[in-house]
Image (spheres, helix red, strand yellow):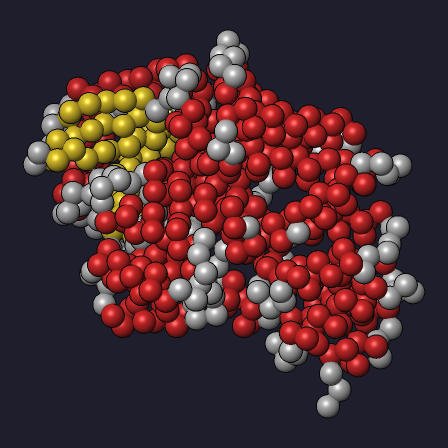
Length: 562
């Protein structure tokens, strides 16, 4: 039986293109890792091969690296050791691919990028500048020393700025140069223009993301902005607190890593994967960028660790996991101790559940297996949840069909779809059979659930053209009634169709603040990180049986513009 390589050599150019664009992954299922590596490396290295076919071969090579079907070292052999090409698009593909492999060959890749800076082709120089900017940004965000951090960030800002000036459509470089410039000002305690800078960056991120049709990365960009606002607050209130800055810089890199990870997943979905590859990709915690980038994995654990009480079981487990990630995976003593901690931490998870997760991630090394089991058993943090819901509300504002007197159920379905695309498990009461009359009086609009289908948060949504006090009170009390457990964070989303949004928002907020609900109000805070003219958020803290619970109110303007 002919192998995949022999099969490829019999094809003409159009057939080879179709094979690499359409049929590749179905055939790859039948091939060994060695056969796949031999095929793709020979296509890229063959001097008489069509350059577009070579570009497709590099893309498939990297897809297989992302899917853990080919080792990074094999891709590096193609992109570094055996590289001999002058074609500009082919070299741009090479630069982008090498960035993902940077942690596996740092010095050689940085030297290659620096050589591209001497190129006479502006596109190549701009691409190299942009990726050098990403490398220095990462070093700056993860540095343990303030002076080193500022120096690396300054260098990255300069590289992003040069890339954006060299090529007109480098919006990504322009935005990152502004983000890093603001971050450097914060670290240097240059605060006079922080509010203006934050507003400008919020507008740039919203334009870039809101109109991109890629809804999945939205919550991560919202988180990016939120962390910048947190850095600015530290600078204004406690400018000498480098430890606090380090926490936020690590969070900023974590958000960047999430964006990159989602971009890889989107790319893989577009690669026409076969059913078995799609099944692997659809695993909730399959994280291609994190699998390739050790620093990203560490930042993810650090971010979660900083959200937790430091004397708790989960924090102790994560501290030990960080140490374990840096040790020899063959050290069984550390492994068994950590497994014992994991079972204690998630004592409600049965042995069969943990065994099933161990089998699910059996292809990973022991460190990654442990971390992915932890991820799957844990819930999304309150911050992640908040980011996803706010972004969903921002996204609905970019779609004009939802403006004016639009169905509340259809709006809720849109929000639910956005939350699902952000990786949350959703039960949407409005997506019932059309033969039913709708949800019953006791049901809220949207449940957000964990992997065991237990509620994390409830969302109730209202269409309002004026402050209908009785209607508002009924809906808010419905959340208290249906939330039998007293969840920490629940949400009210108001789809406003009022003549004057500013006046409506103030009247709505004042009513909610003054009304006597089932559980008394303990505090009200405006969310300072949500700085939009057409979307506002405030949080009411209610005292529920001597426990403080949060009711987050998001009010969005959906009045049809005439």
